[in-house]
Image (cartoon, rainbow, N blue to C red; front, side):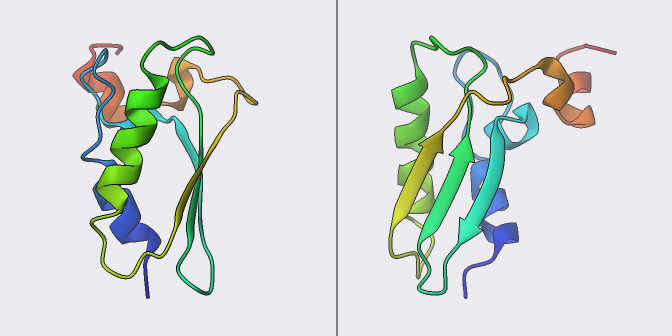
Length: 100
């Protein structure tokens, strides 16, 4: 069985190359869904709708998750509703970026 904890662990290894924070702590991952047959759907956003590196981040997510044994298929749903804001970052990310 694939666990959300394992997926989160892997997502914490994927970084936005423009911001030195992983995408989980950055708060751009909105939802993780694991189907009964181990298909994984990630609903996420970008820090800006016209993010020039969005495809690179999505490819990194797919590539990283494909290393988890047992995952059948990986689907990424990109959404901009709700729009991302710095309030969505974890406390750790805010400290790392000096936002306190």
